[in-house]
Length: 199
Image (spheres, rainbow, N blue to C red):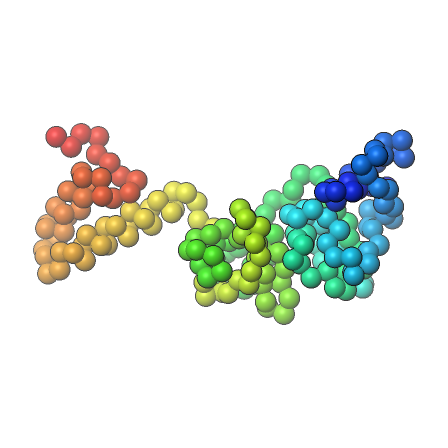
């Protein structure tokens, strides 16, 4: 298999013939299965965020997310995944470490609830990458959770606001708490909830 590799961006594309190679590309030859031999001292051969398979000696590590901060030490071959990006595996929040390629939320390396893509796992140590800024960092199990949907985040914000209102009415009977919640909703103090007609 032959690839055209952009000299500036490192983007790879499969070529059907040498005639397709452009001036902005260099030719890279892989084996029949698409594996490209790699010198680990050269670092990341792909654009950040590109999914690829890697080989470390005889062991294949599938679906790695290439990143400049990633340790390419011991990588002897790589194979870019150039079709549609594979579906991100989901993490159940219970087993650790999360699967490589999964997107989770971390509250230590970045602000609370920041989405991070799992880049690599080695001996239980997990490195993730902020999905918006590309900044990499360590992920710690106690401060990670599965990625929440927008609806789940809105629900948590609303429940948090309701808890605050209940806490602000200590010793009150249930009816008083419900009345305080109703007024907070009416006054727009609970995110994501509003009354159709508050008059």
